[in-house]
Length: 195
Ligand SMILES: C[S@@+](CC[C@H](N)C(=O)[O-])C[C@H]1O[C@@H](n2cnc3c(N)ncnc32)[C@H](O)[C@@H]1O
Image (tube, rainbow, N blue to C red):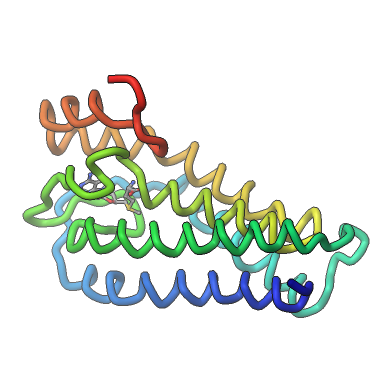
């Protein structure tokens, strides 16, 4: 693995993110929203996650800025990054497929929204956020720059920690007891090992 190839692997992850998401975003526009729990905090968190996962690393990949934060490239680290990125893409595709018409980029309940509890959702309540964590870890492993590499983890941490409780409160309000029971038997981003 060379530094240039590691950059290409990272770029493939970014292109995959857009390509996988686009059809769901298009379809989502046609499905009525019955509860919109988005707030300014969520919009800011979404923007910061996009900054950390795309804008800052894109600037480094194409301009080398800020070169002062570079550190030596290690091929084994980049190979590990490639493996983690494959995990991200697989989980990202599967979680979109399984959420289907219930997916939203933000905090929304759609018309005829169903609580999905099968597939990956049988084990974890937030497999899409698990995939975001993998994406950010892959970025950190693939890009040997302290700022461009770690900005994804900062962006995902802001999005995850500011959103997950609000999302669960919204789901609880929409599905009541069914969501309580579902939460009791699942983990957030890791499967529950002890029941
Ligand atoms: C960006 S998606 C992320 C879904 C989930 N948090 C995950 O990480 O897989 C956010 C939207 O998905 C919907 N959602 C989340 N969990 C769901 C579930 N188990 N069943 C149906 N819809 C769900 C909610 O409408 C929420 O606004």
